[in-house]
Image 1 (tube, rainbow, N blue to C red):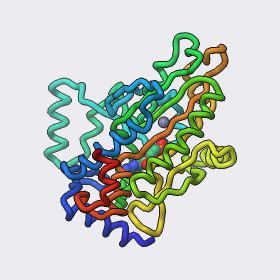
Image 2 (image 1 turned 90 degrees about the vertical axis):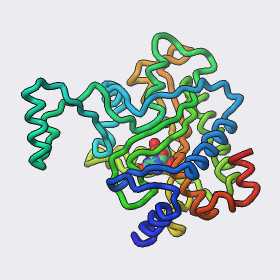
Image 3 (image 1 turned 135 degrees about the vertical axis):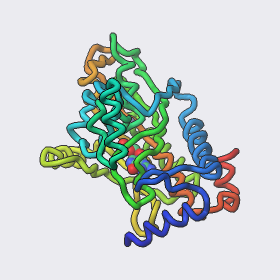
Image 4 (image 1 turned 180 degrees about the horizontal axis):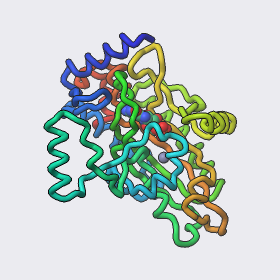
Length: 303
Ligand code: 5GP
Ligand code: ZN
């Protein structure tokens, strides 16, 4: 794979009027034609998990700062974090802000961090909903989707600053978490294949940060804690993750103080669809005009 082929796919996406360059690397606007693909993927994902009794919830792309601290994201991926800053000053500080802007200087020093940060994964807001007493015997299930942010600017359109994730989450006992992972490994592969995508399942190797990150990465690999569905996205030569199954073990149970029905620390697992990456994988596989995609793929996405 060369950077040229990745850049070429980005140019094709923009030239075809599907996505819009929004002004900095990795940030895109979307046109209706693109959003119709996204709606099809979201509806298919919902249908795939229907009948499990998952509670469907939506959250904004912002989470409380305390939630980011408690998920340990800062330990693992500080370099991907996005923080929100706001202006809380008086007239004098406002004058300083405007003077800095007018002078073409850096003006963020006048701002202060807000109580919210950008959400790096769709599922993070559901764990605090599971505290306050033992979970029901069958555990709890959530369907959660929405915009996520990771600060990794890139010319590769598969690496966006802002993208949508659609997840099915289980919180309960270890057996239930294991069953959820197994079920979604099978269902996920079938779902991606039903859209005509060529997917492999591989053990993930996340880019954990720094020296301590080497240990986390080794752990993730050894215990196969995360499996990814990989498919050609920006290039036909390399595969990119379009979805994942994550076994958290007791990580969120411990951090949030979640108890399973038998009073033990809860285990959890989630299946995540990278909705925008799946849209790009479909465009790579079937071409840039969804009107000309195979009839069976169109029927799956838009029944
Ligand atoms: P994970 O939490 O497993 O890293 O992310 C879940 C899914 O979100 C990934 O499998 C991938 O499809 C999607 N995703 C992760 N990072 C990016 C990104 O930078 N851009 C886009 N479009 N999707 C991403
Ligand atoms: Zn998740």
